[in-house]
Length: 273
Length: 85
Length: 118
Image (cartoon, rainbow over all chains, first blue to last red; front, side, top):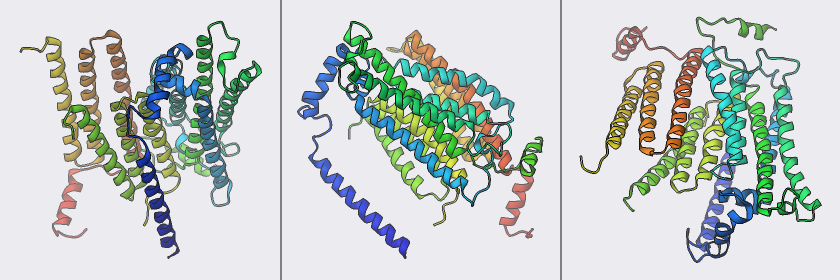
């Protein structure tokens, strides 16, 4: 009964929210309305000036990392907080009395020649492509966020195929990967903030890159600083992706039985010692 | 509705999103729901690309299609696969 | 044919071939009896169909850099798709997904038809 009441309350609140948002949407100008403020003041300014002011061919990058750098800083902080939140919640659940020491989970070593070879072939290209997406973000779609996610996924691929060979009971509350990933994520976020503060130190506003002493051409300076910000986002996001995978996937007990032609020894050894 | 191919593709992708999203909410097998969410994300990414928002499409494909699906599958393994109602 | 160059004709033929392979994969999923045989159909036919499709798109692109990028897509598909199929089959084997056999199917059929119970 109580659960039903709670569900009814949730439905009521969400329904009200939906109606309220719908009412709000009615006041918005139509999509693509050429006479809306966004189309008359904001967009033309970016479309006409972004190339000259920031040196970025891809306007999306110019807007995200330069004009709206403060928003992107907030986004990066939110992503970092998500990784931190997953870690805090799951660390509590693993350390609790209800669960024994986590097994190697999804991150155990997969003894498959095919997977091993494929990961060996694909992972370098995946990691390299992530860096390409980062540095090419000025010209083509992409940038720090997408590159960071791709890099993190490359790390996840490596972790899936070449996890630790044997669970280390003493040290495997989460394994060494989490600490390194957290270092990466924090370093990225701090680097972003540091770039903003560096702009203040040279007399500009927070995240006002144009004043940094990186050369004569202000557009080029902003381009370089944008690349720096994107690199910071890259590091923060790839670290957070790794944190999320390490905290959520590690501790998942491997279920199932070994294949007939497989050596069952590792499974037995894990259960006994 | 316009009958140009681009509009048809966009409408088909939206329909795919609607169907996969609804089925993902209704199934009792959470692993199936996670896989359907992956399909939903790829349809969304293709829809964004069809609308010309290539950066958004790229992000949706990376995050929704790959990362979130992996994390959902991992979370399913860690908790429960059957949703008993 | 008027208005269609030789390159376009070849690309169209390749696309038709690609669709034929993908259709075979769909038929395989719907008609084959168990997980492994369905995977067997999808793994091969998808890889072949997508390879032909990328080849057709590379021909149609008319741009060397774009064609090389599509070739890279093809190379990654050619490695990743069979690997994924292998990983799926391996995981299913470890998880104990039953293999279809003619005997098992006959037993189930006789049970369903009200034959002697077990």
